[in-house]
Image 1: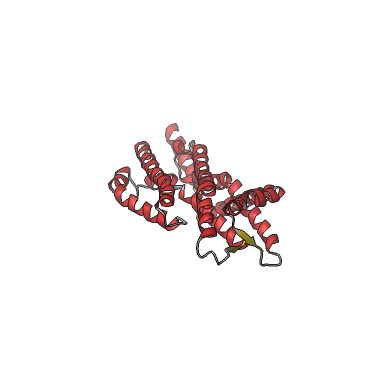
Image 2: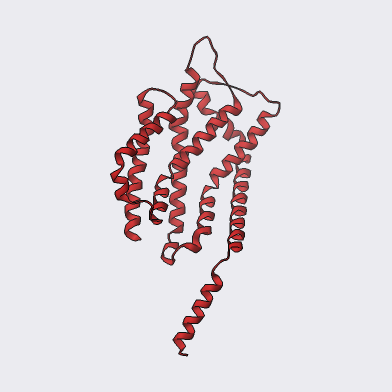
Length: 252
């Protein structure tokens, strides 16, 4: 047996040794989830330090600006509210760590030249999510609360439960963050060979109709202005997704 054959056999043996079993994958997944939970808890502790500022100066601001009246209807409602704000805030703060742990879990399935882009992908994914959060807070939530506070008869006073109000705040912000992940979804589907830029261009008109439908569904009002305000970023995200799909396809 030649020296080259010996080296080749050794490399094959090492590859087999490093090939993870199903149980090892489960163990790896468990540790990644633990790291994500730790990151969320650390973020929640940081948020709890500034909890009064987050509640009074940030989360209640859309209601204050719209003139909406908020009520606490439960004996320990504000206690649970503060913990809820800390946990959701911790999740938002730790979102880069969440994406990092997800990518580390799928890293063994990546090729060597793909692993060096992990940091860039994690950064871009985090930026997309946080951009969605910012868009929801400064654009969607003011429209939503203004519509809710002034809709209906003037003889009926619109007063909202604080837990229902926070549920709207969190759902809108997290939903926007996920929607803004559309470029990364395009990247994944293209890498898997499911999506192509030609397919997205071919069905662009259908996508526009779908975008307008979702904009009308998510829009707090019936006026076309608010619908356009919500639809325009989705148009840009779709075009960016086509570009990312094209670049990904070329590098595959």
